[in-house]
Length: 343
Image (cartoon, rainbow, N blue to C red; front, side, top):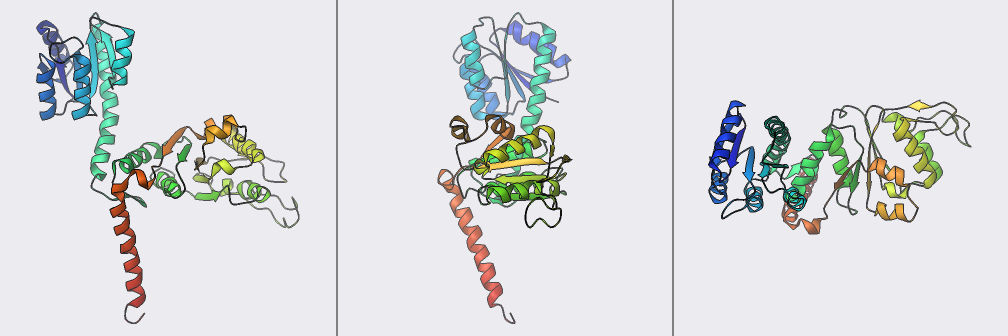
């Protein structure tokens, strides 16, 4: 049963909301002012708070900020008789789920409450996931237990089982490929192939044949048909590292794969259809490359459906001891194995 806190200095409004919400099957607690309500929030986790905007001592916006500090996952709906666009914007910026006037229709309020609690269900799952890993030092092959890395783990969990393309952004050495593998291994495609290619480390002509394959006789040395990585990854995923280095002509072919799920081998005349989840990564500013014309804008938006930002180690220094322990432990294990008797 969802737990709802109603906060209003108007006793009649409190009682009305309590009766209405109780009839809907919710557990309802009431408070007459903000300080009392904040005290309740520190002692009990509510799924939803419905609060008046104009109250003595602590107004609705101040109370909203307080709730988000002690319980970020709690959904908040603001109700007021003094509606204004500016206040509505402020409320939403501070994390309110919705903002409605006191002359609301009862059925409309019921819908808003149900929608907020549905959203809370999603957020609660995320919070439980974070709680479950907060004492862990790794997720897949990623190492770290800082807040920044826990956010990355949570984002991996959210995006893993979608079909959306993912663009991983981060400096060199931040573990972009590890994130890509974690996304794949936590998805329903985990038993299908996952192939990796560095778009910046292969000459253009060779890169095209690597990605899309070629037909026998397409060029000197093409003595037989060869499938490309998109064919090999069929049903699974492909990781395009350093996507910012992809030559313009191949950007066009990649865009066609995304839009039509089809391509042709080098020297081929027939379309090959594939279902492949694309995960790309870059350490470059792709938006700047779009502005200077070296990266296609339409491809950028097709790849950047869900961006995942990987923080550099300097921004998560609390992970340094964890990483040191991990690598020193691995080195010690390898050394002990080499020097063990009989080896």
